[in-house]
Image (cartoon, rainbow, N blue to C red; front, side):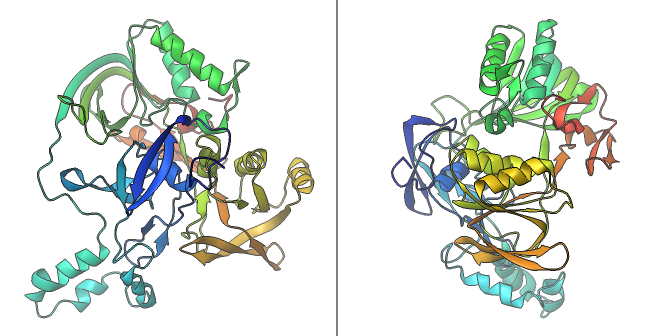
Length: 465
């Protein structure tokens, strides 16, 4: 392990720049990370598992994902006039001097007085507030509502004028691409080689999508080499523009798209005469959605316990950031993709406690892998997690046939399959359709001129992309 107090940082690997250490603060405590980290990956590397509290009952919350779908790790970023509430730690790019604070807790994250709400869960049903605090009527606006808002709210707005500047701009192109995974980069290459004017938008600060964590081989090259070669070729094309830190968020009439570019959100203060963010209106003849897919969770008691994490997210922290969310990992999966997390964990020296596979049949290759590395394969499902603010301790398993088992682990990776990102294709009455073979919705019709490719269209294999 390296990097000062980074107790959960691997000594080698990852795509971080270890020659550029960064200092940041979380809840007043100074921690260390590296260039190329997100706030979430730096917290993982420092062994931080508790990052927030739930909205209503103030249950402890940990990091669940590694992307923009994160529901738990919402923090206040910066301070003073630049304070920004409800920022996802999983998408906040780490910079030197970053200040972050947990929210929705009092007086502190570990000792939150309002966690007592958990004891009253049986009576805090939907509509409880409005039925209980009706009388006297004049108390609602003066006393009841402000108190409820303070108890159930999330972050705090700055309350004073924003000192930064913002911009808006127009752009025109033949082909607009959302996403820079293998499908998006391949689409950009094909369009660019045809001489089309191309704009590629990627919400991350690095290009490559799942290739950054999972790797693979494309055209006989390792993923990293293929990405580098592809970016070199795209960079030589004068009519291809690649926009990182840019999220495509809306589809409007006549081929107009909305995008937000976080120009200087990865700095504590924007350079002089520069804007912090820019709103783009992009007019495109055609668009390609290569926004990938989102991994599905599985429901069980305690699935919100810090230390429970999506399987692909755990691979991202280990493979891309060289940060280990746990030292002894268990996996709960109902599909083949979940086993990739086991392979990643073993390749980096982590201990695998067990694999709980809900499917009736597990391949001989997986059973041989388990036998070789000394962990059990349990057919059944997770029924509960024993843990708390400091993470997972034990996992309760209901085995096929009715027996029960317990697994000692400090982390649980969960994979329930994948849902294509159908948001952009659902504009202009585009409706998704159900596919039984992947148990998910895929695009079925889209705004004029739009097509979905790769995982966003239900093609999850690298060769299919």
